[in-house]
Image (cartoon, rainbow, N blue to C red; front, side, top):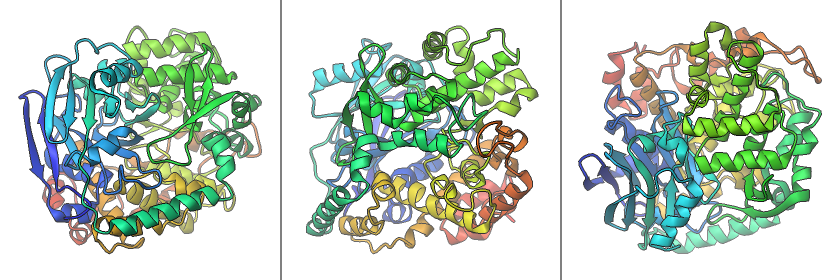
Length: 608
């Protein structure tokens, strides 16, 4: 076997058992790695109905066959588990040196079950695994934790850690690395916290066997060069995703006041243009030559790494018009291990609930001091922070049905930073995202605002699926960053070619459609198995977009037509081979080699 190690590391923290599990070749050819490998392992290892915060849940750290290789933007890995936020499948990818070291440790994934009775961290060096006390690290932020672990074990390691949010089981706590890289929006950091696992330190010194190393290096060098020569490269390096602030305002999709509006008169104060004036550096993931992390000195003089999502959700969405103050909030979130998207959503929901007198406190939009305090209270689950720490869906359930009209989530995961009153294709992308309302899998809005913006066409649904196949399927299973082809136009064909050189497979771009169909259908099967039912209502966008409209901008008065959206949803199901309730059909599961999922699902739902 070339390109993969053929095994996963299995750790039971409760029993202190450590072993290696072999992985069949057909698992790799069918699921590739990363997200694909993660969902297959979760399906096999998570007991039916397990509480996500119980010892029975399983945490997966998975690499792909291109992860951590000397290839463009390959320093990524996937963290996955049953989500404590949604109770369905949850994952995220993050850039980290842990990707480099995991690929060189002799296995393709780490699976962790059970729970320690006291704080611990893992030290993994190739095949050797040690469990150390983390009593001295518990309560420390992710920045200090990484520093201390590198002092202890050397700088040439990869570190994944949680902050106070993960320790205190905040339902949208993340896993962090490199002082600003964060992954696992659906509460994967809380899963670590529930296991009393403060951190994972990895050092790998082996080299995976490559099928055609000469060809892989040739393709890599060629791809790196093409990235540097792209016409958009210089602008990307200057602003990265921060250019989206101005773009979002111009196109009426910038989240403002808990997604009430899509434009904001003060957008320039947090824009990419303003960021350039105060920018002091850049950061990126390992093996990246188009770093997206923009560094500024925040309101306190500390360094903060910014991108569009955290600035929009903690800036325009809360009406904070000082980028340095937004930078401070973002840095605190990274140190505490909080997902900035869900955090900005949850605080925005709380502020609006106060306006409507559904909660006792009335926080003003833009009240930086109080919002900063709320972030600390959330991380510590102190006071009203305990309420906000459960996320928008549970906050809304607690307040009652009236609050559903402004609860911005799908399946429990808060909407990321694109307002969709006038973009039904992006609303569908949120509705059918495999983890809840996340933008990464199918960022169709970039093309949607250019043409046929208000249409509910079949072609738009086909584009949603095509983007999922690449962004959520190919890149999340390889596992590498999607930015090179989507931000500087690197030819997508480089990726199957690099995979084939690494592994000896003969995969084309078209073949990834089958791989993605398999991954997405098994993820959907996992949701159904764990929910114990399914309804197409679970794939609908937030009610705000279908019952309300913006009052400002060129799309004032426009809202999502729910009947036309429903037609798009039906066509999406058809393209995926699912029935009219969004459940994979028996013949679909059979044709994708997922026959093992049929019996468990038929105990719950009809597959006709």
